[in-house]
Image (cartoon, rainbow, N blue to C red; front, side, top):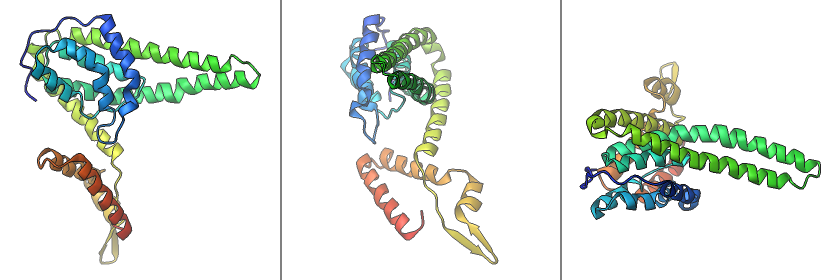
Length: 270
């Protein structure tokens, strides 16, 4: 993406602006799909702030496209990535830098949110509520609901204001360090994408090769020896090439992958 046309720094976003983004982020998963996952919710959440930041229609359109790209994180903590992205948007950082920052933030925060909230905090308060209920305490469901929303709102709003405030400080000299920042954020973003490929794409092959008296397992003895998760990487690279270079439709690629997966499993090659 090219840089924004209007490079004038936007007015500071107010607490009310940031809070509006937080409230709208409650609907992050309402437009979830398997092509871009939470992208629709991301754009909906950030929409009021983006309209305040970008007065140039072309810049606003470019920002809309930028925040309609793939995004997936824990639903409690998306505002951390939003705060950083909005701080960069206000400083009119390069779109590629904003994209890399957002991608770099979403995966680590997803891990923290899943492990500390869904796997720890929520089960603990649910266990306490269940214990209260087992003793006939009518306050049990209210305890759970109140605790749930206190935790959620504290984290959601706290992360937004923390990330925006510190992101604004970090991007105070964005133009003097944009090249280094872009390279660093891009490397981190690509590392995250590589991890996502290995996590989201599961493909192995049971094929074997006869080499005299030896039987070589194609997956464990050959492919994994060259590079673990080589097949997922090749699949991801092929799909990226088809969509980015050949302009193939994502839904068409999903259909092709589904058919090839069924056929491959039926004939025993994957």
